[in-house]
Image (cartoon, rainbow, N blue to C red; front, side):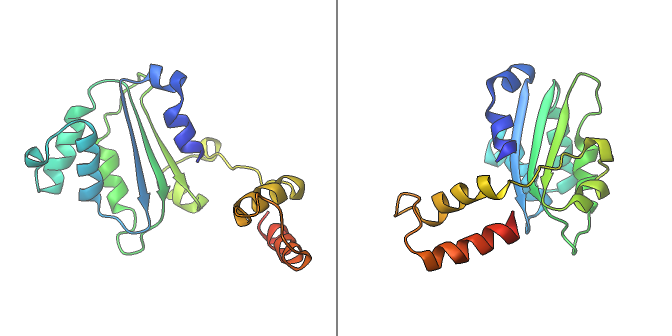
Length: 165
């Protein structure tokens, strides 16, 4: 993903003391996300606290220098709403040293409800049909070396590419 490329980029790595990338996905628990982040800081399992508020404080105490946190594949969890985000966001030190949090989501409304202003939302462009078809065949027909094996499958594949972009 684009987020992974940012995270793996050496120029980016040179600009941050602390870097964390967490795949959030549809079903998650804030406590588990924070524990994961703390483990990435080297906190031992037996040192992880159980109380969510204590875990958030513990994470805040680790973010003492310039940081980049990437929350990848965030969904709106209807059950929790965005209370989890307010809790997590409150533990990120609000500093003016270039520290930042990047959120990726499939839903622009989720980004806005998390406080992203319109000018901070990146909207990737759809691929053209000419660019989509080779990508589709590479993935759909891996065993065939990316070559569509039949005209019937090519017709179906073209319909998929046209609808999905």
